Image (tube, rainbow, N blue to C red; front, side, top):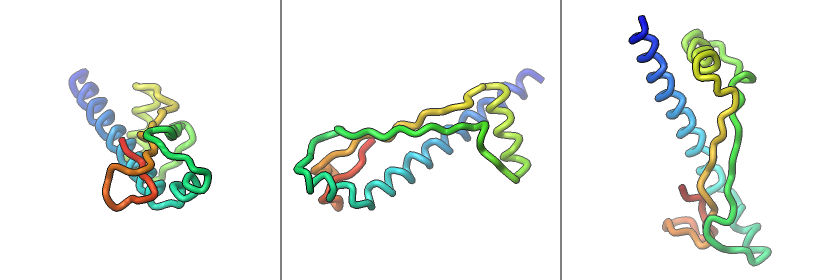
Length: 108
């Protein structure tokens, strides 16, 4: 039974990491497609990694209807006890080192 519990925890940790990675990517995409660079240009601000974004995931506030997702969240909360997880998104670079983002971009 212990090996099954350990295996479940590993799978849950992997799924949690996947969730965090997808959220980070989505936030980066949103910021890259925003007018953030234009706002900074308006005030003559540029540089590398001078703005960093962090957000918190509070697992106690998540509501799910799917039985598997509910079981997954309960496992995280009970066994690993991360009620809050901090996600950090790289930094803002202006000019951007990646072609296609002349107004700047978020990099890891």
